[in-house]
Length: 400
Image (cartoon, helix red, strand yellow):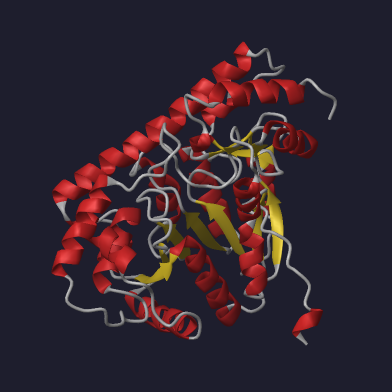
């Protein structure tokens, strides 16, 4: 039976990383996978995380199971970080939260929860969206459609087509939005646009899901919650998928959370039981270590201040590389105005490179970029940015 099984295609992003590792060329550059890198091209352990881990190791007394939704103290700090400690939804206990294995785990639990409790709902995804979003919700059996998001003419947000599409979605459907640092475009709504989108979503009777994977990487930890808080209105309902891979550097620890904001504390209790049921049949209960790190850092004033400073350093480096890339492209005489790259936020940028140009960059220059033309700006460093700009200049000057 097993002999008839065919090899699965490589993942669109992680498959590129595997190909990168197999590439023998010493000059190779990986701008595909979404991992933060410092100016030396390394993915560091944050100092606040290192100290927290050391303290946890010294105080460890047990490796027993966590509860199905994880430790209550972890859920508490996750809610306060995302919504704000004094937010009405937090204070009224109308948020059900579960610790999940990364943001991907949060999305899958959300998918299973939606399929179980709203089996006839369609999920609407932005066009484009993170390539793994469709994979996750297909696996959960959730039907999907897309709504306009990216305006190729302006390299900006297609706000009017987006609002028009929302106005036509059937009541009871679900819409997924990126809380900040949209992946793959790097284009976020303004604060005013977030309000417009939230009003349109709720007026249409839709249930919003926010994928919040990069808090702190756009404009600031508080500033990046503007979209979420535009949706978190009194008695409003929404799902929030959080990830701490990027802003805590906890990629391999798989630390995330699913928070569901309900109209009342009683509703939150019922929803929590349904989340627990989904989790029990999936991974049963979450891994403890990463969540304990996040909890320790956010509950210690000195560690939290250190963490916030480290997040600011990462954010400033990314934004600095955006500016340097635009300047390097201009210095190489690449045709077109690339200033839009400085207006994008987060680790990713939609460069406008075609699939053929991306393939040429990989085959001829050993520069790995996702087929959509998305690059990980954090993969740029002072030592490789000139070569990247030179290679882009060469491929853009060739017929596609």
